Length: 431
Image (cartoon, rainbow, N blue to C red; front, side):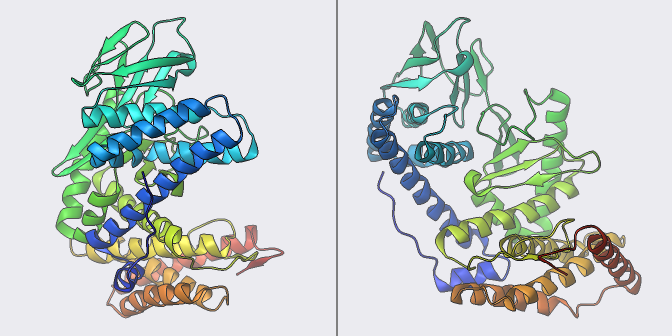
């Protein structure tokens, strides 16, 4: 369970700056995130002990179980620690312990993480786990539902044959729905194998997460859209496909807006893309191309610093509100990926819309990289990274686009900017 220090090789950082990175770049980022999670786990256990949290002893025991599992089966520990909701829980728990705040699950949830590692490694063990409301969450696997009137914490035993025993139950946590067991469901398309997480309480923020399991008809829609999206990515967008295969582990359903669809990623849930139910494969493919950029940049920022602190607010061509430089960088990098998606997608579709999307976002992202480069707030590495982004976008500016697509793209961009100036420009905002 010893974390390692990570540095991104210069050639890998340059490929990431250009908008790609591929499987090799993605693996560097995944390795860095794994070390961060190990560090957070150790920090959480130490903070629990220092603050004399009542679950500190259970957390320390769980940490020892994880260390033993890692010695015997490192892949099992990597797998469960890399589950995005574990990262979210670790971040929240470290912050809460540091602030002496109330914890929804607490340090003892590390016992559930250790149990999953033991299950995947085929190792017998025993651990105390939280059971709020009579439900035990086993990250990456599912939930154990205790009989009514059960305790708020449980002592569970894992047997070498994969059975889990405790609180009067004996069950085998696998992909089948069973009495007292709710498994996470899988989404597969070709060689892509993802989890659909609609159970874990740490899977996403409570404000936008969908409560309850995804209905069967919507689950079928997700599977259909993913099959179509993955086929499209493999045929037209192979670099995005390679990065997705390495980074994305979970899709999480969230509520959509009143009009249209929504998607998001967060740094503390590396490996998750949250989204409202996809309407079709093309939307899902373009969303993956967008969100994989956010995931990559978030991981880069965990390793290197690109920006100095800044209090300004700036115009973002893809947002209704003024954004700080950090938000501007995230948007520019995401729309570098979006521009590349539509640039390639033009060859696969006869209509005008891919040309419009490419023309609009290549220009918008290019202009924003200029704002960032002129800000005076970039570190040396940040200037190198932004220069790489701008170099890719500059090469696309003169690529031929139908005149009508250019006109529509220009009109959409001007309409957005005019609305922004009327609504959001004010003190501290830069247009």
